[in-house]
Length: 501
Ligand SMILES: Nc1ncnc2c1ncn2[C@@H]1O[C@H](COP(=O)(O)OP(=O)(O)OP(=O)(O)O)[C@@H](O)[C@H]1O
Ligand SMILES: [Mg+2]
Image 1 (cartoon, rainbow, N blue to C red):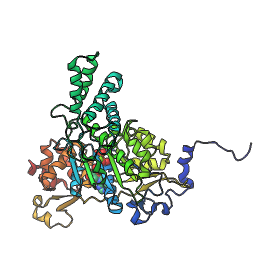
Image 2 (cartoon, rainbow, N blue to C red; image 1 turned 90 degrees about the horizontal axis):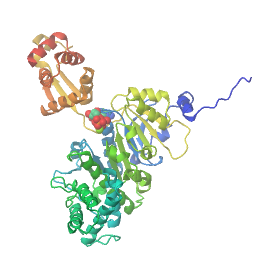
Image 3 (spheres, rainbow, N blue to C red; image 1 turned 180 degrees about the vertical axis):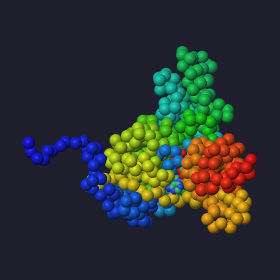
Image 4 (cartoon, rainbow, N blue to C red; image 1 turned 180 degrees about the horizontal axis):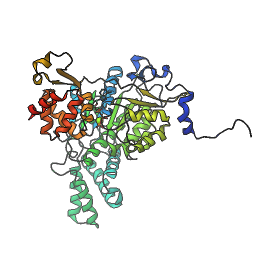
């Protein structure tokens, strides 16, 4: 028997050991880029290198951002977008599923489009596209959102009626429309199908009825968000600075997905027709945050943007709590994956399986606090170092969100004079948030408490805060726990509780 035995091990087994034999961070020349041509994100955890992101050395400009709720996904996205706009004048279109971005976008001088609240999209708008191509896209969206794909005849009837509506409005199906010509709406399409049904010549009226019924859900008075004349020029979205398309005002997921798919289709066309710009940096970034239906479907244009975006300097950011909700074609092709705190083992297994990081990195990700992150980057050239590294924290661009809690009027003169007793607390939201969490308060309740504090102008007395908590139904025991977490002594806590009522 020889002394040395050659063992064959799997590639991912090997990568788990890499920490022992290689430096755990990419060399600084990969992390530190020309500041006029890259985005600062934060400093690395082990060697404290300022990390600036550029896609010049990466396979593409797209990012996937994953992490549990509250981990800091949206915060990272905001920081990234603001800096991209400083450095490269990058335009951003945020498909804002839950309305999380609108306040920030307004604050940053961007545009918020709230669908159904006075803003409408006509999904038959062409924005320079040939009608025949738009018909395919509309049918593609209906395939994803409805069961029309299962009924060949109904699908054919619908598609034909859409074509007919364009022809009736004076368009030629395979020609680029004259600028300014007004597209028909889905209402014209249902009217055409209705007419056909009325004249009685079609031999399968049930098929027609079903086709009409399906389209009606998008044209009914009050739900016709996509069947009215557009109030916005979608074609211009990719060159309008910072834009949030607020979908939270739409009544359900189906409408949100339809809007998101329509926007992606239009942006994809725009990307293709504008072509290679040859300028520095990124021209536009589309953000899909928690838009799982749109990010997961194989037929989604998010995938086309990931495939072709690089050559058009067009980036996609997909953020999700659940990495398995992001289509594999997106997930395995993005140039950068940002991993914030992950809790579920099955998500961690998925990430480790596809990105091949060490168990050391895995255990760090499980322990992350808010804003701490691991980055995986796919470099152009084959590299001799592990491409996943840790960041101390995403260093943000948001103004600090500070809450002031005043304790002075609950304290006795003696206590007020005592230098060791704190009279006023200035807490960043994230710190106050973790104090609530430590007291065992759930995230939905925390959101309510913050909303109450927001109404109070982010300033309150300590007994005022206790009273807010009581009114929300939090038990006295939990409040005591919370106040102890603020390092308040028990006899003061007793006074606070009795003052709170
Ligand atoms: N790097 C950071 N530095 C300071 N504060 C941060 C950082 N990241 C996040 N926060 C704060 O933590 C809170 C939660 O962050 P954020 O809204 O980005 O979480 P999320 O991952 O998008 O959660 P959700 O999935 O619920 O949307 C916010 O108040 C945000 O301002
Ligand atoms: Mg978020």
